Image 1 (cartoon, helix red, strand yellow):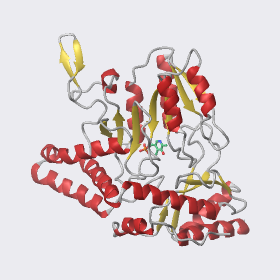
Image 2 (cartoon, protein in one colour; image 1 turned 120 degrees about the horizontal axis):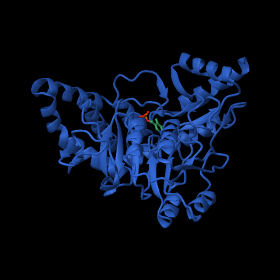
Image 3 (tube, rainbow, N blue to C red; image 1 turned 135 degrees about the horizontal axis):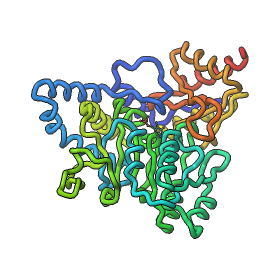
Image 4 (cartoon, protein in one colour; image 1 turned 45 degrees about the horizontal axis):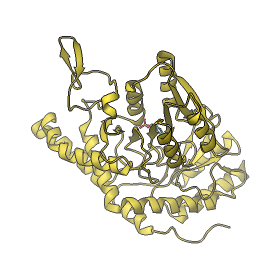
Amino acid sequence: MLPTEEVPFAAVGRSWRARRARAEDVLLDVARCGRPADAVLAASAAHLAREQQIGGYEAEAEANAMLDASRNRLGVLLGMPGAQVEFLDSGTNAMAALLRAWPWRGGMRVGIPASEFASTRMALDRIARREAIELVTLPEDLWGRIRLDDAAALMREPMGLDLLVLSHVPSQRGIVQPIEALGEIAAATRTAIVLDVCQSLGHVPVPDVGAGAAVGTARKWLHGPRGVGFVALAPRLGDHLDAWPTLQTHRFTAMGYERAEETPLLETAEAAVASRVGLAAAVAEHDAIGHESILDHLRQVGRLTRLCLADVEPWRLREPVEEPTALITLDPPSQRELGQALTALRRVGIRAGHVPCGRSRDHHTAVLRIAPEPSADLGWIKMVVRVLESASRAG
Ligand SMILES: *Cc1c(COP(=O)(O)O)cnc(C)c1O
């Protein structure tokens, strides 16, 4: 039985859609890349025009107040008010820059789930070899959620853990990790946390878990431009990081070089500033519609989508129906049928996503991913159901 109720808070979806004059088709793959609002395009274009008029550095100086306001706002949205937010070009590189700069000591132990984003895991594997640190797997339940009692035991045992690295919401499974409870245990055991919010910021509430740092990206649930990622550093974490030296961050001294004061640590100095301005505009658009309203709306859209998809045999939902996310993944009956379904959806104007195997160390088969835009309505979702049903019948 498909639900007949309309998506609640439909005004959120309408407002979101009205801000995108050129958007074609139906996009159900925000987890890969969202679609920026007209205001985001306009802000980026205006910045480029300013670069032409007065020069890039001067234009950047003019944009700094707007960029700083969005740094502050991102810190608040991340549950890290007062954090130092720095811009890089992607979530991947923001995480890599942070981990490269982390104050490693030989023998440190880092807890990480087997489901962790592959680029993060590979960066840590490389660091583990060079710095003689140890990676410890955080056990997960059948849905891929970290088991709190096991994690607590690992953090409390005499060796303990020095750091947890984890994604709040993974990209190949739409579950929410229990980061609030993990944060409490981490605080009690003096375990630092590095949180990946690439799939959660702008999508689900990000609680204050006392994270040392958080890493995100602009183009997914914030619907910002491509090519911008960010890292938020808790106050004073910067004093402990050993960031890669450049002439923007360090100065020569008689002894060699040292950190320059009051400069960013990890931020790339040379950048497409117009894209950062675009992110600032995307954050402003998000707030104009209303942060809480968007999150509430997406949770309802996700719930309705899962209700609709729960009984589409032989596709298998990979999350509980009530999981509070709008990132829905399904195991296909076969890889061939996954390909057929994606093509059939494309034919009716729906761009769904798929996550190829290898997204994490424990991810061995491609899955279908439905990550709806806020404007998704029940009609689209039922269309997905019909296409999956007939793809399976045809196969
Ligand atoms: C997309 C994603 C990243 C990487 O972000 P990019 O901006 O694509 O480099 C990291 N972690 C998770 C969970 C992601 O979904």
